[in-house]
Image (cartoon, rainbow over all chains, first blue to last red; front, side, top):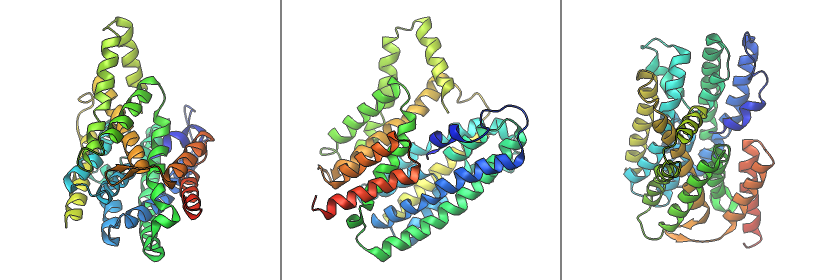
Length: 256
Length: 102
């Protein structure tokens, strides 16, 4: 969700060697609490989009990856087909598979435990876990962040949904701006170089330009094509030179 | 009912990709191009979603109070405000502009 921004400031994240368990727990709690509280924004947005209390809570309990949840309720509110809406949310969740790959090596979990750990494989737990210098630290960081975030995210989702039902017209309170603000906050730390900015700009053009002519939910899926299109265009411009290939690979490794 | 279908499909799909990452052998998805694409996909989706939820009213594009709110969020991000403050800025400014008849 957000933690690319918060982590570099966290104490001791760059250190090598031993790090006290208490310090790992402190880092993990900091991230877990800050992001966990933002479940409130999701609860309000979801209820404001017309989902019932049970539907809103089911999303936080079962989907538990914020961007996908916001995307789904946004698409449903816009009148999108449920499968189109789910497709957009799913594609946003695909990044978690790559987090899982990194975590799998670092956590070294027994196979029987993996299905239970999987639900917590998200941006925040990955960011905290990857910042720890030892396997013990990685496991503590992953578990404490995951547990704190799961409990708080679901609790604040419930409170937000109840609150939204209590205040009625959420638009009058400006709460319809919470969704796009969350997306922007998630997006901002990803815009590190020109490739990412080009992808974002093209996606905005496609998403807005196609909105009036395609069924609800479809323009976002078409906008996702900005990623392969920009990669392809850059690959062509690099002219397959040794330099371009090496730089591309280095950039790839630099990703989260 | 269709909302529950969307929730079910999303929940199963999102859990499956999380588990996939933990289960597949390292290296299977580690090709640079695949990783690069996986990193850029959320950029494209989030950018499109931000723009749509700011400017869309059904299938029409409009400029209303939300644009001011999201602009406030952008300023908060540039000032390195924490996540919750960014969202709060968007909500407060949108509500304020609307209250003034925007």
